[in-house]
Length: 328
Image (tube, rainbow, N blue to C red):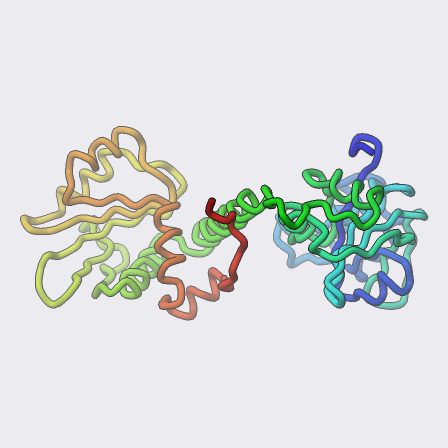
């Protein structure tokens, strides 16, 4: 079977029993009402969602309305659906049997009937396939590993990855998790910590790293945002911070150099990156260290547990273990 012939969808639920015992897949958003009453266009769904949930942010409106639109108009009878259930940690694969309908009772009001074909252990599938159906979205298209789920239907209970063979998706999956975490941190920093708030955050990070750090008064024109010391004695470390998304030019770093006295060290921190001439300048001036957005994220991950609780709430992370390829 080919994904060009068979479409595969993924779905999540907090009510495993509803899905498995009543043979349905369903979405919430009960306040939206019957989706049959909304015009058949993505824009109409977004407008309706925005009116129903006026406090929602633009990104959430687009994502949530998109899921509802796809559930009503794009998924079709005879498409396949993959549902990872939490109650028994199984991968449930079924086929969609009917059109969309609205069920007024309960939380999950937007429904489609499904015939469940197989309920397989998670160990049956590659780590990459499990990662794809572990999407943060409630309803989504399965693309990268659709063939693996279709082959599971056709191949009985034969395990996709034999026990004596390495799962070659583990490395890619681990890297995808790491990269998505880094992207998340950068987005949260850029969204929530601008200007002076970013300086306050950097000072807290420096303290977590074992430095004494003092933020300059807001609105000062000295060009120095933070002054830090490793201990009671010099050298002094002068920090300049930029929370914008534009890459840093050489002239901007030179302004930090101009504020430094003999014996000082400089630290330039940006959420973005450095232009080639700025990188060349940093290489020629070893007493100034430049940290870009990705390097800052690495420091945040390293010292996360020692950050102030308010910053942990801005960047909510949970420490987990992820699989990595075995060394040969």
